[in-house]
Length: 217
Ligand SMILES: C[S@@+](CC[C@H](N)C(=O)[O-])C[C@H]1O[C@@H](n2cnc3c(N)ncnc32)[C@H](O)[C@@H]1O
Image (spheres, rainbow, N blue to C red):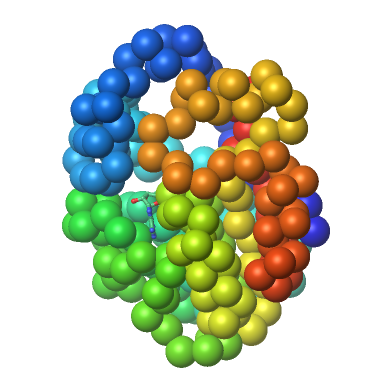
Protein backbone atom coordinates (compact mmCIF):
# COMPACT_ATOMS: atom_id res chain seq x y z
CA UNK A 1 0.00 0.00 0.00
CA UNK A 2 1.21 3.48 -0.90
CA UNK A 3 0.90 5.61 2.25
CA UNK A 4 2.63 8.61 3.77
CA UNK A 5 3.20 7.91 7.45
CA UNK A 6 5.81 10.69 7.65
CA UNK A 7 3.56 13.65 6.89
CA UNK A 8 4.11 15.13 10.34
CA UNK A 9 7.76 15.81 9.47
CA UNK A 10 8.66 19.48 9.07
CA UNK A 11 9.10 20.49 5.42
CA UNK A 12 12.76 21.01 4.53
CA UNK A 13 13.73 23.98 2.37
CA UNK A 14 15.97 22.81 -0.45
CA UNK A 15 17.82 25.01 -2.93
CA UNK A 16 18.20 22.52 -5.78
CA UNK A 17 20.21 24.80 -8.04
CA UNK A 18 22.66 25.70 -5.27
CA UNK A 19 23.17 22.00 -4.49
CA UNK A 20 23.70 21.18 -8.18
CA UNK A 21 26.44 23.81 -8.39
CA UNK A 22 28.17 22.63 -5.21
CA UNK A 23 27.91 18.92 -5.99
CA UNK A 24 31.43 18.06 -7.16
CA UNK A 25 32.68 14.48 -7.59
CA UNK A 26 34.73 15.01 -4.42
CA UNK A 27 31.65 16.03 -2.39
CA UNK A 28 29.80 12.95 -3.68
CA UNK A 29 32.75 10.73 -2.82
CA UNK A 30 32.81 12.10 0.74
CA UNK A 31 29.02 11.81 1.19
CA UNK A 32 29.02 8.18 0.04
CA UNK A 33 31.37 7.25 2.87
CA UNK A 34 28.49 7.92 5.32
CA UNK A 35 31.02 9.21 7.85
CA UNK A 36 31.16 12.30 10.04
CA UNK A 37 31.14 14.62 7.02
CA UNK A 38 27.82 13.17 5.75
CA UNK A 39 26.01 13.42 9.08
CA UNK A 40 27.64 16.28 10.95
CA UNK A 41 29.81 18.09 8.41
CA UNK A 42 28.99 20.86 5.97
CA UNK A 43 25.48 20.87 4.44
CA UNK A 44 27.18 20.45 1.06
CA UNK A 45 28.20 16.91 2.07
CA UNK A 46 24.92 15.70 3.59
CA UNK A 47 22.74 16.59 6.56
CA UNK A 48 24.83 19.50 7.84
CA UNK A 49 24.11 18.29 11.40
CA UNK A 50 22.11 15.10 12.06
CA UNK A 51 20.73 16.03 15.46
CA UNK A 52 17.89 14.49 17.46
CA UNK A 53 14.91 16.85 17.44
CA UNK A 54 12.03 14.57 18.39
CA UNK A 55 10.46 14.62 14.91
CA UNK A 56 10.00 10.83 14.92
CA UNK A 57 7.76 10.85 18.02
CA UNK A 58 4.61 11.57 16.03
CA UNK A 59 5.65 9.11 13.31
CA UNK A 60 6.21 6.20 15.70
CA UNK A 61 2.87 6.86 17.43
CA UNK A 62 1.22 6.79 14.02
CA UNK A 63 3.00 3.55 13.07
CA UNK A 64 2.07 1.90 16.37
CA UNK A 65 -1.61 2.64 15.70
CA UNK A 66 -1.56 1.94 11.98
CA UNK A 67 0.13 -1.45 12.39
CA UNK A 68 -1.62 -2.34 15.68
CA UNK A 69 1.74 -3.02 17.30
CA UNK A 70 1.70 -4.77 20.65
CA UNK A 71 3.74 -3.36 23.55
CA UNK A 72 6.25 -6.19 23.04
CA UNK A 73 6.57 -5.89 19.25
CA UNK A 74 9.96 -6.51 17.61
CA UNK A 75 10.97 -3.61 15.35
CA UNK A 76 13.87 -3.37 12.88
CA UNK A 77 15.14 -0.15 11.28
CA UNK A 78 17.34 -0.65 8.20
CA UNK A 79 19.58 2.37 7.68
CA UNK A 80 18.84 3.49 11.22
CA UNK A 81 21.48 6.23 11.34
CA UNK A 82 21.93 7.30 14.96
CA UNK A 83 18.81 5.38 15.99
CA UNK A 84 16.50 8.39 16.41
CA UNK A 85 13.35 6.53 15.36
CA UNK A 86 14.16 3.42 17.39
CA UNK A 87 14.83 5.65 20.40
CA UNK A 88 11.33 7.10 20.08
CA UNK A 89 9.79 3.62 19.71
CA UNK A 90 11.59 2.51 22.87
CA UNK A 91 10.35 5.58 24.75
CA UNK A 92 6.78 5.01 23.57
CA UNK A 93 6.83 1.23 24.10
CA UNK A 94 9.49 0.38 26.72
CA UNK A 95 8.82 -3.36 26.40
CA UNK A 96 9.34 -3.51 22.64
CA UNK A 97 12.43 -5.10 21.11
CA UNK A 98 14.41 -2.86 18.79
CA UNK A 99 17.15 -3.63 16.28
CA UNK A 100 18.90 -1.38 13.80
CA UNK A 101 21.53 -1.75 11.12
CA UNK A 102 23.49 0.82 9.20
CA UNK A 103 26.63 0.80 7.06
CA UNK A 104 27.89 3.83 8.97
CA UNK A 105 30.25 3.06 11.83
CA UNK A 106 30.17 6.80 12.62
CA UNK A 107 26.37 6.89 13.01
CA UNK A 108 26.30 3.81 15.21
CA UNK A 109 29.20 5.03 17.32
CA UNK A 110 27.28 8.28 17.89
CA UNK A 111 23.87 6.67 18.35
CA UNK A 112 21.25 7.48 20.98
CA UNK A 113 22.41 5.77 24.21
CA UNK A 114 19.03 4.12 24.88
CA UNK A 115 19.24 2.04 21.68
CA UNK A 116 22.96 1.91 20.88
CA UNK A 117 23.36 -1.64 22.31
CA UNK A 118 20.82 -2.88 19.73
CA UNK A 119 22.48 -1.39 16.64
CA UNK A 120 24.92 -3.14 14.31
CA UNK A 121 27.05 -2.25 11.34
CA UNK A 122 25.66 -4.15 8.34
CA UNK A 123 24.38 -3.51 4.85
CA UNK A 124 20.74 -3.89 3.87
CA UNK A 125 21.38 -6.72 1.39
CA UNK A 126 22.59 -9.03 4.17
CA UNK A 127 20.55 -8.68 7.33
CA UNK A 128 22.17 -10.42 10.32
CA UNK A 129 18.88 -11.87 11.62
CA UNK A 130 16.97 -15.16 11.31
CA UNK A 131 13.79 -15.51 9.24
CA UNK A 132 10.48 -14.00 10.42
CA UNK A 133 11.57 -12.35 13.65
CA UNK A 134 10.26 -8.78 13.27
CA UNK A 135 6.70 -7.49 13.58
CA UNK A 136 7.65 -4.26 11.81
CA UNK A 137 10.58 -3.67 9.46
CA UNK A 138 11.20 -0.04 8.54
CA UNK A 139 13.66 1.53 6.15
CA UNK A 140 13.51 5.29 5.61
CA UNK A 141 15.45 6.78 2.67
CA UNK A 142 18.19 4.16 2.88
CA UNK A 143 17.94 1.18 0.52
CA UNK A 144 18.07 3.39 -2.59
CA UNK A 145 21.74 3.81 -1.73
CA UNK A 146 22.29 0.35 -3.18
CA UNK A 147 22.67 -0.41 -6.89
CA UNK A 148 19.60 -2.09 -8.31
CA UNK A 149 20.69 -5.74 -7.98
CA UNK A 150 21.64 -5.35 -4.33
CA UNK A 151 18.51 -3.28 -3.75
CA UNK A 152 16.39 -6.20 -4.99
CA UNK A 153 18.26 -8.47 -2.57
CA UNK A 154 17.61 -5.96 0.22
CA UNK A 155 13.86 -6.00 -0.49
CA UNK A 156 13.89 -9.80 -0.38
CA UNK A 157 15.75 -9.56 2.92
CA UNK A 158 12.99 -7.34 4.31
CA UNK A 159 10.48 -10.04 3.31
CA UNK A 160 12.63 -12.77 4.86
CA UNK A 161 13.07 -11.27 8.34
CA UNK A 162 9.54 -9.86 8.56
CA UNK A 163 6.64 -11.75 10.15
CA UNK A 164 4.32 -8.74 10.21
CA UNK A 165 4.42 -5.43 8.35
CA UNK A 166 7.08 -3.43 6.59
CA UNK A 167 7.38 0.20 5.57
CA UNK A 168 9.99 1.73 3.28
CA UNK A 169 10.61 5.08 1.65
CA UNK A 170 12.82 5.65 -1.40
CA UNK A 171 13.92 8.44 -3.76
CA UNK A 172 11.33 8.84 -6.52
CA UNK A 173 9.59 11.25 -8.86
CA UNK A 174 6.11 11.66 -10.33
CA UNK A 175 6.92 14.14 -13.10
CA UNK A 176 9.82 15.63 -15.04
CA UNK A 177 10.29 18.59 -12.69
CA UNK A 178 10.62 16.30 -9.66
CA UNK A 179 13.02 14.07 -11.59
CA UNK A 180 15.26 17.06 -12.42
CA UNK A 181 15.13 18.36 -8.84
CA UNK A 182 16.03 14.94 -7.45
CA UNK A 183 19.03 14.58 -9.75
CA UNK A 184 20.24 18.02 -8.67
CA UNK A 185 19.77 17.21 -4.99
CA UNK A 186 20.85 13.63 -4.45
CA UNK A 187 24.36 12.89 -3.24
CA UNK A 188 24.35 9.21 -2.36
CA UNK A 189 21.45 7.33 -4.04
CA UNK A 190 22.34 4.68 -6.62
CA UNK A 191 18.78 3.73 -7.60
CA UNK A 192 16.06 6.30 -8.30
CA UNK A 193 12.90 5.79 -10.34
CA UNK A 194 9.47 7.03 -11.28
CA UNK A 195 6.96 5.90 -8.64
CA UNK A 196 5.31 3.53 -11.17
CA UNK A 197 8.64 1.82 -11.84
CA UNK A 198 9.22 1.38 -8.11
CA UNK A 199 5.83 -0.30 -7.84
CA UNK A 200 6.75 -2.66 -10.70
CA UNK A 201 10.03 -3.47 -8.97
CA UNK A 202 8.27 -4.20 -5.66
CA UNK A 203 5.98 -6.55 -7.52
CA UNK A 204 8.84 -8.24 -9.36
CA UNK A 205 10.76 -9.08 -6.17
CA UNK A 206 7.66 -9.99 -4.16
CA UNK A 207 7.89 -7.08 -1.72
CA UNK A 208 4.48 -6.90 -0.02
CA UNK A 209 5.11 -4.07 2.43
CA UNK A 210 3.92 -0.47 2.45
CA UNK A 211 5.88 2.38 0.89
CA UNK A 212 6.23 6.07 0.36
CA UNK A 213 8.59 8.41 -1.45
CA UNK A 214 11.28 10.98 -0.92
CA UNK A 215 10.11 13.49 -3.52
CA UNK A 216 12.09 16.61 -4.48
CA UNK A 217 9.12 18.90 -5.11
C1 LIG B 1 19.31 9.60 4.36
S1 LIG B 1 19.98 8.67 5.68
C2 LIG B 1 18.50 8.16 6.55
C3 LIG B 1 18.76 7.81 7.99
C4 LIG B 1 17.48 7.48 8.80
N1 LIG B 1 16.77 6.36 8.25
C5 LIG B 1 16.60 8.70 8.85
O1 LIG B 1 15.58 8.74 8.14
O2 LIG B 1 16.92 9.64 9.58
C6 LIG B 1 20.48 7.18 4.87
C7 LIG B 1 21.06 6.17 5.83
O3 LIG B 1 21.28 4.93 5.14
C8 LIG B 1 22.52 4.41 5.54
N2 LIG B 1 22.94 3.47 4.50
C9 LIG B 1 23.50 3.76 3.30
N3 LIG B 1 23.69 2.64 2.60
C10 LIG B 1 23.24 1.62 3.36
C11 LIG B 1 23.18 0.21 3.18
N4 LIG B 1 23.63 -0.36 2.07
N5 LIG B 1 22.65 -0.54 4.18
C12 LIG B 1 22.20 0.04 5.31
N6 LIG B 1 22.25 1.36 5.54
C13 LIG B 1 22.75 2.15 4.57
C14 LIG B 1 23.38 5.64 5.75
O4 LIG B 1 24.51 5.41 6.53
C15 LIG B 1 22.38 6.57 6.43
O5 LIG B 1 22.33 6.36 7.83
